[in-house]
Image (tube, rainbow, N blue to C red; front, side, top):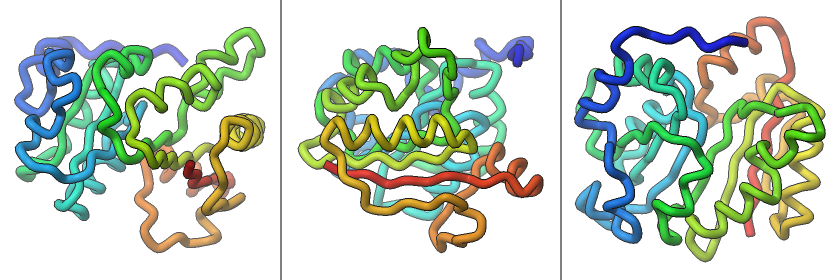
Length: 208
């Protein structure tokens, strides 16, 4: 699907106070951004932001960073932030840059409806590939946690094998998150759409 460019998105995103425009300055010292020592959790590929914004609202004792590559998508999330959320900030960049910006400072990574990159030649682009799992080793603390949601069963099966081969163990798993009615589940915009169409949502929480 071709991404629709929103006129003025770059200007709005990179002038917004919640967007960190020079993240390399905070390598190894992201606690100074939030001015506290609370744990930091990150959503990679946050889309229109419902998940990460609701997370920040419900959990003021945790800091959150939302990562989105496209300004035309991130700008829609910024429009949703109507309350003061000092425990939330955003980065507009490619996830490949993360190891240069963080030094074992993240406690948990969320991967919600990531691009499955179905072609074999694109395997390394998947956010659950060995390539990215090694990135997460660089940015996460000693205990590493990842939560994934997807509507793509083949991608989910690939991810489960990738996680376990890399040393993660499965803590929670669901083959139909909507039916399981996980109490603390926060739906993304994408998830809401597929739920209405009765499409199964696959979920896993892993740790190592």
